[in-house]
Amino acid sequence: MSTTTSADPRYDVEHDTASGTLRLRLNGTWTVDTGLPPGRELVPLVQSLPRGSRVVLEDAGIGDWDSLLVAFARTTFLVAMDHGVSVDASGLPEGARKLLDLAAEVPPKDEDRPGEDDALTARVGRIALGAWDTVSDATEFLGEVVQAFGTFLRGRARFRRVDLMHATESAGVGALGIVALINFLVGTVLAFVGAVQLEQFGATIYVANLVGIAVARVLGALMTGIVMSGRTGASFAAVLGTMNVNEETDALQTMGLKPVEFLVLPRVLATTLMLPALTAYAILMGMLGGMFVGVTLLRIGPIQYLTQTQDALDLRQVVIGLSMGLAFGMVVALTGCYYGLRCGRSSAAVGQATTKAVVSSIVLVVVVTAVFTVILYLLEL
Image 1 (cartoon, rainbow, N blue to C red):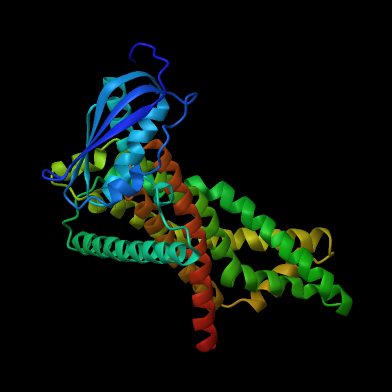
Image 2 (image 1 turned 180 degrees about the vertical axis):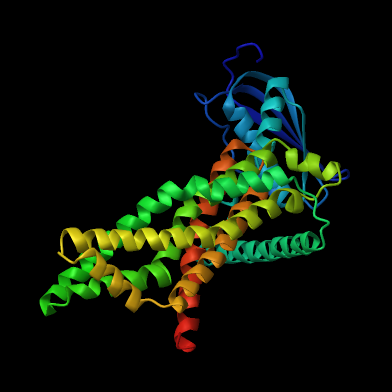
C-alpha cells in the first residue's frame, strides 16, 4: 500500500470523445472508514459510453487503500462489461491489481451485477432462460452418453476396466448395508400402518399382502433409488467435480480421450446393472421387515405369513419393481455424472454440484415413479 494520507477519496473524470476513452484519476485515502467518494454519476456515465469504448483507472495519488478500492474498481468493471466497454486497471497499485485478477477468476452471479432489474418478471425470465439452457445442455450430454454407449457395444470404448469394477463395487456391495436397513424399516412401517386398519376387520393376515405387493411393485425400487441418489449420485458428482477443478478432464481431452466415454460410461454401466440387483435385495428386506412385525406383534405364524405373501405376489409385480430399479440406476448415474462434469472451477462449485445432483436425482426418481405408475395403470398391469 502507499503512504498514509488523510485526504478524502475522490476521482477526476477526463473524457476523450475522440479516442472513446474515459479516464478516472483516483487519489486520496480509499478505505472503508472514509467511505466512497461523493458523486453517483459514474455508473450512468459508463453506461452512456458507446460499445468499444475504454475506461482507464489511474493512480493519481492514492494513499491508504483496502477492499473499498477493489470493490470500486470491480463495480466499474462489471458495469462496463455489461455495456461492451473495456476496463484498463493497470494504473492501479500492484496489490489492488492482483486482488482484481483474483476476483475475476470467479464468475459474478447475476444477482450481484449492479443495475440489474429485480422485477418479478425479470427474475422469472432469468429462471426460465436458465432452465432452458440446462435442458439443452442436458440433452447434449445425454446424446454424448448414447454415442459412447454405441461405441461400447461395438467394442471400441476406451475406459479402464478397473474403473468399471470399482464403480460396480461402490454401487453394489458397498450399498448393501444402507439399502437393507432402510427397506427393512420401510417394511415394518408398512406392516404397522396396515395392521392398524386391518385389525378393525379381523384381517391382520392381509398385512402380508399389503407389504409384499407395495414393496415388490414400488417401494423397494423407490427407496433404493432415493438412497442411491444420496450415496452414489453424490459420490459421482463430487469425484468428477473435483477432477474438473484439478483440470484432469482437460488433461484427458488433451490425450485424445473423451471424458464422457472414459469417466461417465463405466459409472453409468455399473449403476444401471447394480440397481436391479439392489432392488431385488431391497424387496427381500422389506418383506422380512413386514414379517418381523407380523410374527412378533400380530401373532401371525411365519409359515402362514410366507404362504400368504406367496399367494399375493406373482412374477409380474417383481418384474415391475426390477424394471423401475433399472430406470432409477440410469437416472442416478446420469444425473450425478452430468453435474460432476459441468462443475465449476472452485471448491465451492463442487459442493454446489453435489447438492444439485442429489436434489435432481431424487426429484427425477419420484417423477419416473409417477410415470411408471400412470403407464401401468393405463395398461392395467
